Image (cartoon, rainbow, N blue to C red):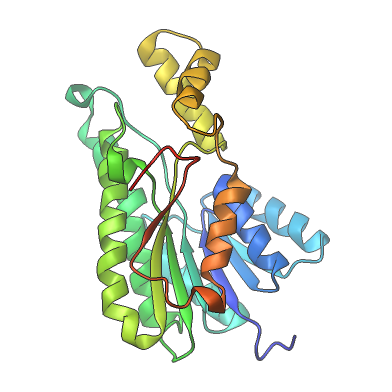
Length: 261
């Protein structure tokens, strides 16, 4: 495969969990993948590891809450690899608790990372990332079944992810005639470092153990277990295939049957 026809992807929040699994599967498919995260040591560790495996990966530090850092991020990937073909908006954070006690700071930060960050990166890619250069392209936003069904003690997170789904559907209709598909992938319970932190939060709120929380959550999932990051990334990867070209404006679950719409 020559450089002229190789596709380029940008994955935000690409150093752990679903983001890292997505970087790996896209790079395994032959894409050149540029990733970002907030901590430089994590970015360099992941980039060096994947390059050591023979994958064409690069990246930089970027916080999706910062307009300046997002501009630098998109400029960095275009300078390194040229116009983008795939954008995966994965950067996110958890956050919640009893709604009466949620602070302004927590609410606004969860919304800023999970929803505003998706908008901020997407806008910059549309303006300066070459995604609208006329080639088929994909925008894939990592949302959540919580954005469809709500999560107890997770009002900020649920609200942000519901916003991501609405943004996805609106943008998909806007860009459909430009050969750009836009979809949301909605994980349910997925075993990631974020999921471990969430279980710790529920254990504290419910005065129980993290193992008990895990058992309670797993019992709600029809297949009886959490999804893996690789299973979520597998759907992301499929949405970049030519055979997915008519899939757009969708919010697709990867949840073991937890969500039914």
